[in-house]
Image (tube, rainbow, N blue to C red):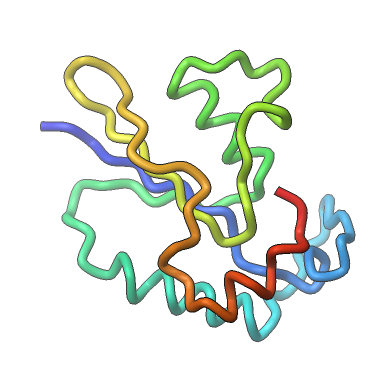
Length: 121
């Protein structure tokens, strides 16, 4: 039996909307950020039990993905794109990690995908 890990970068926040760095702050989601969370819940509501969902900041998510799929972490910022509210899926299969999807936002409503295109990946 394999384990599937879903990595999600959080939705738009008041800091990410303006291009600000949030650091140790914990900014609220914008109304669009809440809609992004709802879209994710609708799209992935029926996940089978036994899977893992990790929701985090982009640097943390990119570093974990690098370690899991064997990419040198030294320049993780240049190697993996992690757009706001994107999902990446890695299956921990018998023969090692299998990357199913990276940085995908297809589950979002079109106006939400367009609203965050300007935010850095």
